Image (cartoon, rainbow, N blue to C red; front, side):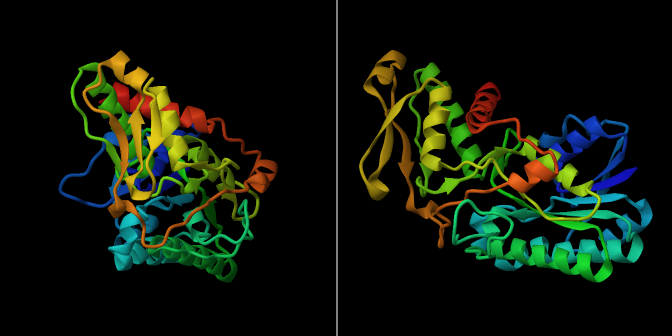
Length: 349
């Protein structure tokens, strides 16, 4: 069996490769763009595995995708490559759409032309639901994106449906709610928080001053899971008898404020909120400051530049069908996800 996985330098692609190497006997072809200085930090565990091969391709280049599918003849094509950061999609909307939507069309075309029996996975997002009408959101919730990123993922979802129904391809689009982990990119808010906590933890231990973590909307609520749980769900989606789209989620929702509090508590740093609006701060408690001989007091503060032009206030998934029909069950709860990320960044600071 041969499997192409794109986006392997990122969190989901790397976790997918690790999962497939551990749970199948397949040869894995990991696709990356050819760049001058690729970052392989997420790929250390498998780069030298004899069942893994690095290949070059680009979602913006149909020739490279055609060549890969024609030459490899994969049984599965799992696409995690994307412009994956919602925040910067307002700055680069055309690139976001080209990678996330037109890029999916290029993958589907390559499969249709050169290996129509290949099973294709498209990585969707809860950002497709956007300005939600009801909670929790299930697979039937209307598409109502509020960002170029959400719009691009919505377009990809429709393309997958069209190719599935028009060309009889096995193609699925998973609606994945927020998922994090120790491989998460540093620009994402959860990793920004966990790395910031690690920085402050070490500053306190060495009795040095520290700068606060700067964030935007603290009250946005998200349905957070661990990426390692989600790649198992993706593989189960790809191995049904007939292709069908599913939601993957924890079925819980937590605010960014709660992530901050639990993260600092993991590091035995305790704070209190004070102020309102953009003046709100999370400051170290007097007791904790005395215990640690703290040289600074503010742990988190608001920076208005991190507010989105159009915020999605609440995302809360309903993955009941995936749990019942696929037998998928996430194993890492929210508290453990937070502690894993914080402890990892403290240990690897």
